[in-house]
Image (cartoon, rainbow, N blue to C red; front, side):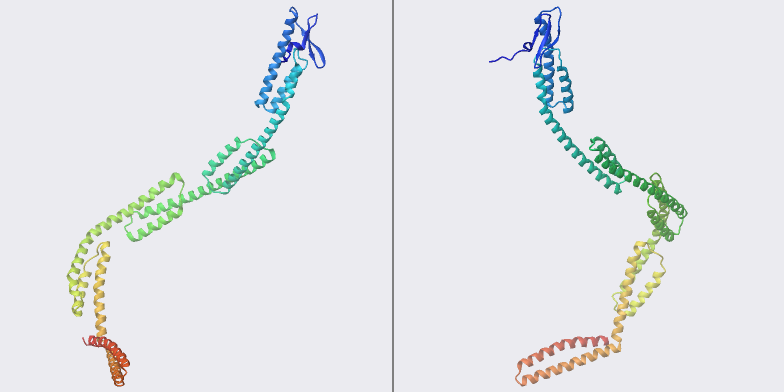
Length: 414
């Protein structure tokens, strides 16, 4: 097995103790070490070579492992290469040069990978920024005045965290983003300025409403004042919100004035209701007394007289509680309706024209029955039993109608 020659095989020591290194271009003096043996002098420069060899090996390892960027690797290779030129060392300097030269393909591959990675990163960054610009422009056109501020702040921080891409694209995207942000800010300021104006106008309107409510709060004109307060409430709602720091206070003042008036009205109504309860009981007692005398209407004159007496006594009694008005009115209306219905029925029974029509109808039905019976007898005499049967059935139908007509005539006689 051939043994690789050591570094000392690339040098020699002359009689004057000058140490030489052998290179492809011939021998080159590297220095002298006085006061030592030739072997020690040569070993001194071999150790220098070994130091250079270690430095080259470390650089080669770092480059191949990718711990240095291509640009950093090239600078380091140039530095080490310059230290090899005319190095005061004994060893295979050409081999060290060859190791450095062998890094060229790795550096080219790493540079290409870095370019591809940068391109991919630039594309991802461009896509992210375009997405942010689209969102910013959408926010700028919208009306999210509270959430939009926070979102623009977050987008700006995200933008700052992204790397720059090519200058023209980056500046164009930033211009769009910045313009959207500026547009949103201007619109937001205008919106809040308009809102502040509206709120101030609402404050003035609500203070005017409160001033009017203060005049009404002690009124005892319950109906008109209640309507006036309802109108003021509609005005209050239409005014919209006042500035946040005063709106609640204004509402409490207005609400307090409303409560003052409606509380007084409620107390008055409750006092009236207590007084009216006795009237309700009196009217209910009247109804209990007269209803049996009026309905059912069997004797119209008797029912009329009882109803008139009820009305006279009813009008002498005062008002009743609100919730009792309708039930009592309904009972009175039922009595009135019963008498009116009886009057209408009596009129129908005594109406001469209606009676004549009823008698005429009955007479026509009798004539028709006689005709049908004669037709049946004639058909039977001729042996036409089927025709005779049909005529008799028709006569029976007319007989049932005649019964109804005769009852109507009797009603008019009642």
